[in-house]
Image (cartoon, rainbow, N blue to C red; front, top):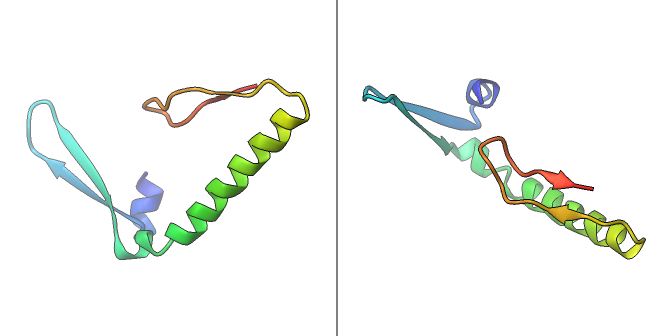
Length: 72
């Protein structure tokens, strides 16, 4: 996250509360990546479909605090 912030892709807002609260949002530069990220998502969806059609058992698990997990 710090690297994305340093690159100007996200904005990090820290609130001086107990417990500490931090919110992240996309910057204009980050929003400019939308089409690239959508293309990557489409590619991943197609790959999963192809692997399932090839007989692999692919299960998509719910996102957690560390991101989306894929179980093969």
